Amino acid sequence: MTLSQETFTRELERRMAAVQRAMKERNLKALLVACLGSSAQTGWLRYLTGGELWSGSGYAVIEADNPQPQIFVAPHDMAAWIRTLAPTSRVEATTGSSPTTIDRVIEALKKITGGAGRIGTVGVGRSMFAGDYATFRAALPGLEVADLEADLNRVRQIKSPFEIEAMRDMGRMLVEGFSIFEQHARPGALALEVSGRVEGYLRGQGCVWGRAKYSLDERPYTWTAAVDRRFKEDDIVLFQYVYSSPYGYWYEIARLYSFKALPPATARRYQAMDVALRETARMSKPGCTYGEIASASDRIFREHGLTVVGKHTEDVHSIGTDISDGPPWYTDDWEIKENMILALHPASLVEGDLAFFLCENYVVERGGATPLSPLASFYLQLPNK
Image (tube, rainbow, N blue to C red):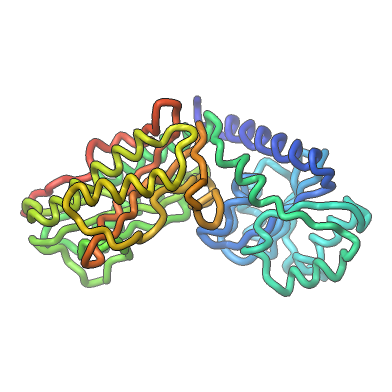
């Protein structure tokens, strides 16, 4: 599979056809897509139209029989940027015009529906301002509105060959970023400067959203380094990415580093996490459940002599144009399916509030989940000079 604007456009056409089939099955005249310019709230626009939103609110309106979505945003520069990404000519900016963005959305829906019948929505519950929603419902009281987010999540969780290849390409880029990190991370180096070199590389590859983060205290919580934080010889450094690819796909991956051999207690926690990642990946076959993955992680940590006191996040989630393109939270009976892409990070928290947030993206195959990056191992000792 070749990644190009041409194959990306075909991929968007495939998605639109799948969504419109779902709309017709439910007798929906239109689909209203709401998003915000935030790293976790622009995924539906990216998935359904190819467009990206940097700030503010935006909407797409999809008709059941028209492959060209309408996109509405306020700033003209935002509309111009979306036009470079989305293969639709129907992108409108509302700044400087009399109708507001939500007014134009309402006008479009009135034209499609006549103010009656059924429409679907995605993103409305978390990405539509309350005032916009009140205006929308007051203007179109005759519309029956169905929230399709759960149904369409089940569609977008199953990845196409294009999507799998796009995420594999992102995994390659992130491992190249690790190589840059490894060239520059030494005691005395500014942590923020080193991560900045990596992020500069990713920006040069076309990545827009994302963050490179650290944990420097052996706890599972990662953040941007303080401006004056320099690496020290006895640091245990977890370097993590949560980054979106040029085609809008999120990828989570992390690696553990030290400048000296790991202390025995640290090494034991790392070994438990390494085994948990590899074993839960082998388990992640179609039909495996979230509960089975979560239980296996706790069991493995206990087998390494560690006291498990809880979870610091999900053990696994589906990932795509949103960091999580599954339910808001994962219940024990959530089932893994073939061609899902999983962000896998066994989340057993051990006594002392300790854990390593190591993670990787995997594609689910019949025999288990296969990593999408060429990362050789989750730990590397670096030179201390």
